[in-house]
Image 1 (cartoon, one colour):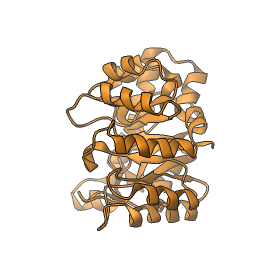
Image 2 (cartoon, rainbow, N blue to C red; image 1 turned 30 degrees about the horizontal axis):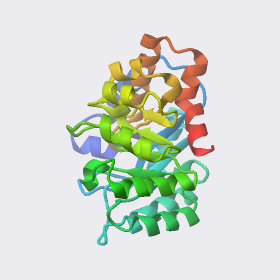
Image 3 (cartoon, one colour; image 1 turned 30 degrees about the vertical axis):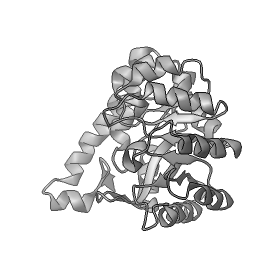
Length: 277
């Protein structure tokens, strides 16, 4: 069992009682007050990151079982490999999703400046169903020509595109609006609720029906102001955890007065629309 996303053995090594912490974790999750119902996670990583974070498919599925999640979209951590094209990491994600089918929905992670076209071709033939981009980790502008071309390709094959949109001081509204204008049919999922520039992003993209926001590690005040019809639950495993993610969304639902059907949309329905589940 993992507690707040960490294994019990690692907690014990740090001198923390896993059982006592698990009681706190349960209380945190319950404090959100979310009703029972189908749950899906649009933002989870597999593999090993350059910073040492790691998560195996079986551990993720164990977390999902504990917290009632039937499905999760999964993609590679920041491990681009020797060629910088995420070939090995994407292959691991696809193999993991096949091994744990149908629980895990594989996405393809690319660097728009490093072999993205062949990476998408391999991923599409291997059953991937979405694209992940990380402008901060891979150091590219969200509205660069290569990004527009890459998102255009993903859109042409019917993939949603999840873009890291938080944690990194920078203006997001103008470049994301440019990207949305350049690929008008794109389905863009902005991670972390566009944390750091959420209000400007919300205003700039108000006219784009294909823009969504995931809740992972987002700011509560931002989620309260965003329409639930455009929100998708995300955990950011292994950086985030399900207990605090559920608490965050439950608090937003309570403060904003979401209806039961709106809660169901955030927790599952919007995910199903995006990935065809």
